[in-house]
Length: 159
Image (tube, rainbow, N blue to C red; front, top):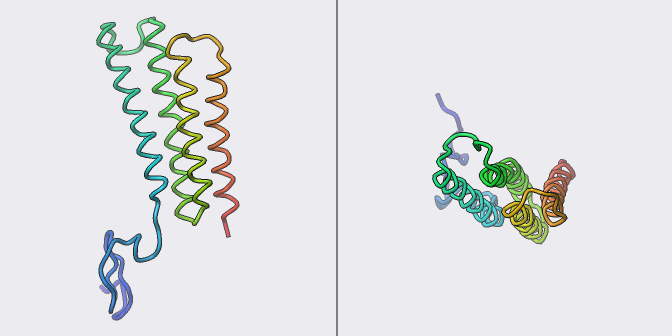
């Protein structure tokens, strides 16, 4: 069964095979690239990994392997990590979609920086205490605001 006609380009995995065409990565052939998202997504992924390692260290120190055992500090570390896991993936996905659809580079850099700053502003105050914190609130606001803007930009790019 032929899935293409002779002489037409064929996408196979990550390469395009076409008559009179040099074989190369798919994104180079059709102009799709998400390098800005890859940069900030990588940094944000490292933040998640570091926070996860921090939870593991606190679990071993406290001897509590499941839950928080009522220990406030461990509960805070779990929430710092959990909150990032809850927020970062959607934001990075929206960044990637916006970039692949031809989004503005400066907007992508601003979004990436805002997400990193937002996550740090959220984590730092919670690291030492669990009470209200305007710095932590600003981190949440920055993260949610950036995610909302990315969502709206993706909607507005619909043609």
